[in-house]
Length: 217
Image 1: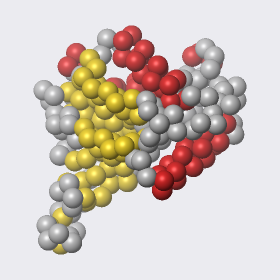
Image 2 (image 1 turned 45 degrees about the vertical axis):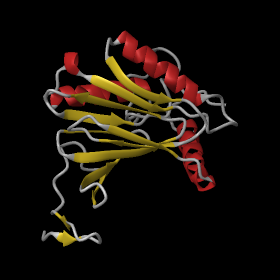
Image 3 (image 1 turned 180 degrees about the vertical axis):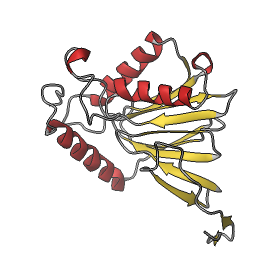
């Protein structure tokens, strides 16, 4: 593929290959960042050692950005719910749950970073989201915040930054090679589209064939 001249006259390189296992995620050249950008949606995660950006938008969801600074490996997850109801043995083998629960999303992200060459003892964690943007539901955001703090403490991970709570959605950009993260609160009325997206996602979970594990309303 030949390079493409972008609107700001910078030359975009040919699309680099996604790391194995992440080919399904949306990746594109972002001329504003001067690098590839990867979009992470609810229930997804991504790990890379490349000079690129991982981006997501959060309402009541939480995203953890985890980084090994010595090896330049990092990743982001995006989960809607803290953990299923009931005993883990009842649901740990269920197929199709992906990383929609924090309990899975954290394990999958950490394991993928370790598989890519990271060291658990060196991992730094930044967490974002958990806004109370779905006022008609129980406070899913606060449940997510409580979960991620509890998980980090139990697993003895090093939390280096957090921006959690409030009532606004957030846009998060994470740079997995350097470990830098940027956030932006979305205060415009047009951002209610995010709330609609989250409501639809919750509805799909509630109607999922996996029964008896989600208690939302």
